[in-house]
Amino acid sequence: MKASDYIVNFLIDKGVADVFGIPGGVVLDFLDSVGKRKGEIAAHLNYNEQASAFAACGYAQIAGKLAAAYATRGPGITNMVTGITNAFCESLPIFFITAHSHKSFLSDIRIEEEQEFDTIKMLSSVTKYAVKIENVESVRYEIEKACYFALNERPGPVLIDFLLSVLRADIDPKSQRPFIPEQDINDGQMSAKMIANCLKQELSKAKRPAVLIGNGIRQSGMSKYVERLIKKWNIPVLSSRSAQDIIPDSKNYYGYIGSHGIRYSNFILSKCDLLISLGNRLMFKPSSKTFGVITDRAKIIRIDVDKNEFLREIPNSVCFAADLRAVIPLLVDADIEWQDSTEWGSVCKKTKETLYANDSDFPVNVIVKVIKSVGSQTVITSDVGNNEFLLSRAYTLSGATNRILYSKSFGPLGISMPKAIGAFYSTKSKVLCFTGDQGLQMNIQELQFIVKENLPIVIVVLNNFSSGMIRDQQEKKFDSRFLCTTLNDGYSVPNIEKVATAFGMGYHRCDNKTDINALKSMLGDDGPVIIEILVDKTEEIIPHLPVGYPMQNIAPEIDGVLYERLERM
Image 1 (spheres, helix red, strand yellow):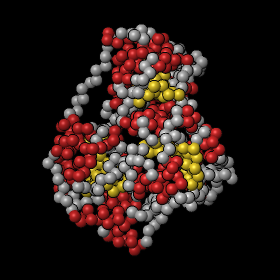
Image 2 (cartoon, helix red, strand yellow; image 1 turned 60 degrees about the vertical axis):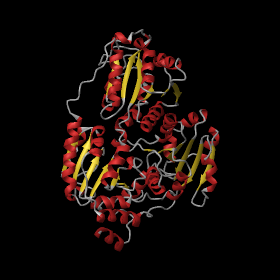
Image 3 (tube, rainbow, N blue to C red; image 1 turned 90 degrees about the horizontal axis):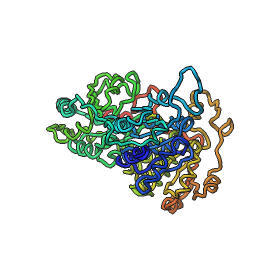
Image 4 (cartoon, rainbow, N blue to C red; image 1 turned 60 degrees about the horizontal axis):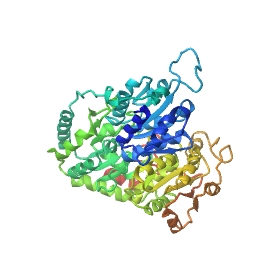
């Protein structure tokens, strides 16, 4: 068997049905092997390798399974670095494949062979495992090892850089050494029992407990179990913004927290006396005047599979490095109860009811209607910038239960559209892709991919004719001295209607006077569509927390009498 055929067989056996990339000389053997297995695995041609990596991110994120992308040597792989880093920061299991033709590297020669460089040296810090394979005897071992690292414990990307002659070589995988992972000396059941004992003790003392969930719940496949656990405990649940779609329709879910969080969510967080963190990194500085005060009021129990997350020390916390797949099912069955406080439940409900309708002006109300106009099976992807804050708030106000994909940890601009491509191939369902006028231009070439394949992707462009998030900072920090962020000082936006026409796509423009019914027919189309929502360039992203403000005192500030009443609850 040819080595490249073995690699493709391995990916198919692991459930990979699509691979994204751009052909190049040293990866043609791999691509040819993919072509031999049509119907089982498909090769998709992007128009920039960054988009290939982002598409693989969407594929892995939506299904929680292994994805794959490939690139040729040199510039091909460097174009992928941003996507690889995103996969690492977002803990996405992606198998990246590249190749080289030159075996040795003499460190004192800058360019020893054209287009060749030390990929492992560059990428080892943003992958869980990265290795060159230059001996055919190690193919099986290294592929199995890389796959194990990608999928187990905290998931993440891996990269194998094959010597071209290895890809072309014949191998007998049955005669090669397999990879056998070391047994984990940490007994998962033992850790789970310790956690259960701690929770039982702390819940017996708590008057106002809350559970804080993060994306680790999704990555561990524990969403359904968490829903059962919360129902059993009857405790309020908060989340990070990237985890707002895990149990969005639970009566115990009270929204996402943060500097651009939901008002009632931050209020509830400010009142709790026990915070149980499940798969959430707790990305706040203990010295913060805004969120650092949590530790003065609440005991924190942190449970995360990655013990390195506890290097971020948080006062008044107890930390458990444990896999949620072992912990949460045991907690569901354990004899742990919280003496239900009608008072605490009433406080949470009244706070939500009082503040629910805040911050729902244009364009949030239009986005709400757009989300409500598509089915619950439609996947939603988000870009980076002001558009994601508008989208996340609209998602909450819409009452949607759709999957929504953020790239919150690394935050690369222009990720939404290529990620929508990967999400489609992972689900074969319609995708609602939100982006901004600047994000659209970062990977605008992928419109050709979407049109060529006639994918059912609705691209919603929130156009404020500026680099809005950075413009806001220049306005506040630099006395409105704008540079490269507005139309008057270097920034520019193409005519998006003409862009849609050039690529052969449907188009509709929407402003605050547009009847949403005019959009519904386009939202129902099966082909690619662009909807442009015009947003005033001075539109400020609200709500937000000014530096140093208490977490519940979000700007623009609510009526003082109402604020004090909510504080006293």
